[in-house]
Length: 323
Image (spheres, rainbow, N blue to C red):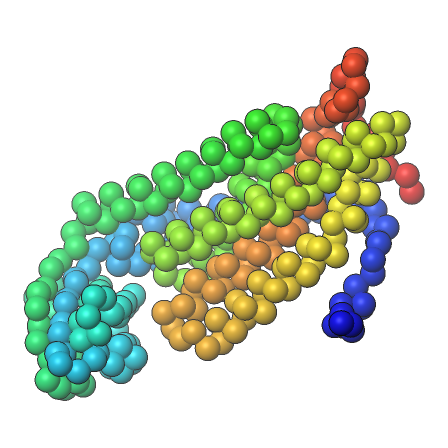
């Protein structure tokens, strides 16, 4: 069976000098990270600072409805509430097809009870028959706990990744991987802030997915790098890094394109509820590929690394790449 002919467009072996370009990309990455931190932190107003807090972290009202025996038209309810200036509106089916949960924010200066009454009236006009099972208010204390747990999940994931890379490779590899992770997370926070994407538990899930993808891509490059260190014991480290990245480049491109196509389709056809998730993951996939090449690997070059398999285990210091 013949392979798909378009795959032949990708070269089998490339010879790009990535390390030589790292000195140009590194300051750009540092400036972008600092800019992302600035726009995310300003104004210094908790709980989400410059980001647009969703209901999960800011608080709001939760309304449970039932349309038994018929199924809930979630899209119709979401469209009806979208014109009420309620901020982050979440409409999700759960349990039976006739049940749905609606989360919405209370506009500035409005009463939570009056807003809930208006939402119930709007829903009753949109779908019928409908029964309102319960109405709860998510207070700031609960939202603050959710935000704290979400940030702890991100920090814990990065810490566990560092420990994993440390045990599998060396500490220098772990530092490079963590530097790449922080780079990806900070830039993604900047995207969330600038694009005014609601920062909620869905966004946290997207960030955790970005961490997993970025680490997977970094581990693949590191594994080939370690093999080449043992294979080419007299080759300068900079050249070994270039060789390893070039050997894995076609695999990285094909894997990234697979995810990019899926996420583009999700962004275009997934509707408003999935748009933010797909955009965050799409950006994270692209920036994760970049950081594996221009953040993680150059950090190893700066710290130096030991040649595997050599008795003297001589530490190698940074070496200049050939022109």
